[in-house]
Image: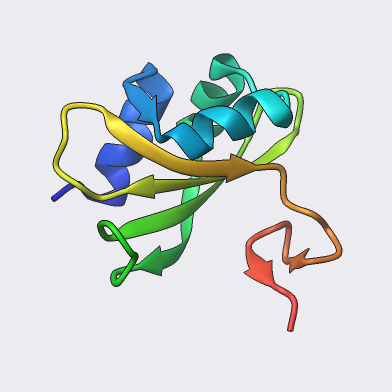
Amino acid sequence: MKTPVDILKQLSLGEFDFTRHAFKRTIERNISEIEIREAGEKAECIEDYPDDKYSPSCLLLGFTKSGRPLHVQASYADTELVKIITLYEPDETEWTDNYSRRRM
């Protein structure tokens, strides 16, 4: 099984693939492959989902070079490419501490 460090490395190298859902979201939300790579360079794991529906996963927070915050949910599954489950720009009304904690 991958670790968060493995996932971050692969994201920054562009070694990722999308679920159908995630691919659709990249188009709808205008998130480019370059932005995903940039966010992956210095991202941090902010939530773990060990009991996720299909495989354990984590939620990562990273920032693009232009400062755009991105949340990327990625699978820990031991596959050649990191599988991105979903991704989005977090809403500041739903997140606090620089987009790292959910508001209650």
